[in-house]
Length: 474
Image (tube, rainbow, N blue to C red; front, side):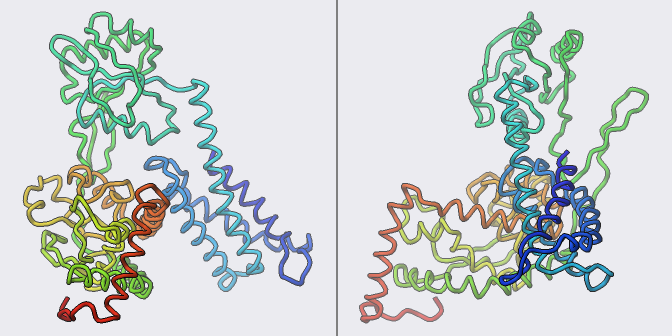
């Protein structure tokens, strides 16, 4: 449905682009110019069908998040528009560059609007109660992850109405809380009469997330639910088999979940190195405008502007990672350091690591040897690629203090689907994340004036010679 709406909007956008003013002093385009855009429109429709299917641009894959949706649409539409411009030289397609520019802008705005309207319609269906009511059977991390995943996918129209977990001789509600599961009902009940309870709550489906689904109590529950018309779904164990694409095989009624063998990538793709160098070369001049004043301020305050930390890179090889001299683990930070960390300015010196080849712009965030030596075999897979300045885990809100297990889940998903398009999308999402963090807040409003005043005082003292010179090695 989304792809169909996209194609209809592309047709309307091309017609609208042909009617928009072609120049500051010219009138609107003649209707006779619209057929001229026909070949370009047909090419655009064909390219968008390919891009939408290949890159999964429906907006819901991976969980609905506005930054992810926009950061995927923007490079996709830009690439489509660039292809149309290039086609004018390679193919007998004649279209005004200004018309194609209007067309690209209208495409992006319309495609984004289509997805937000669909999101609004889904939310409306939730409010009207047109949802599938779900009970999660299980407790612990897997049940938590299932609840969070359902919460990220509103297009499923699933509503969690309760949790059940094995306990003693029966099934009782699990007491844990999660953001995704907040506000749902939890009632304690033995297995006897559990189906009556599910029917009274109008439950449509139960999802088994228990480590031993073959337990007699669970089997009885599943059989009774199916008899009562309640669907039963199962999360296979071990579910942590990331870096694989499961395939369900039916062997005469015996379900077989097959994970095809996959060797983790051990090389750095050429396209990734080219992308790192090209983008870093563009970012370094802009970054220096922020790094140099910040480093000077830290040198005046702490005697040293930069610091380096030992990190584990690809295949566990250690390297020195550079950052501004600000302690991330400090409980109380000066106002100017708080602002630097809030804007991620402290991490920009790692562009040097990218240019040297120790890191990439996008990848798993590197951790120290003291943390990586405790990695499980599952965690070790994140060391199969170069670490990055930002990554999929970071745009989902995970920071250096988050557990390695939580970050590994996203990092391995990134490794499985690694591509230049995903790298660009993650970089755009990172800019969005930083922008949101810089929006005014109580803490921000409290420290911003202090930081400005402190910086002004330090620079005046430095100019007046109040501070003694420091070693140039700092």
